[in-house]
Structure formats: C-alpha cells, structure tokens
Amino acid sequence: MPPTPPAPGSVRPAAVVNEDIRALWSRADERGLRPADERRYQDLLIEWADAVRAELIKAA
Image (cartoon, rainbow, N blue to C red; front, side, top):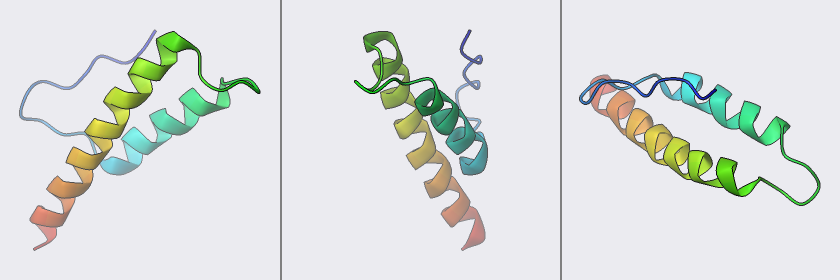
C-alpha cells in the first residue's frame, strides 16, 4: 500500500521521497514499471521536485 500523501502545504524531505522512488523501481521487472506503479512514479517525481524547491527556498 502506498504511503498516505502529505497534507496540502506540507512537504516531505526530498531524501524521503527519493527513497520511495527507489523502492518503487526496486519492484520493477525487466519491462519496467507496471501501469499502476507508473502513475505513482509520476506523482512521486512531482513531489520530489516540490521538495527540492522547498529545500532550496529554505536554504536561501
């Protein structure tokens, strides 16, 4: 079961999202991600980009 997405306005750290992306790919077979996992992957990429952006803004 995928983890519960964070509440609107909160952002998980990029490293945590990256762990979820790696775990998803570790379940992939030689043909790649299953269609159900492909949507989750796209959502995680968006979340990761948001987390990186938030971390950069916080660091600035």
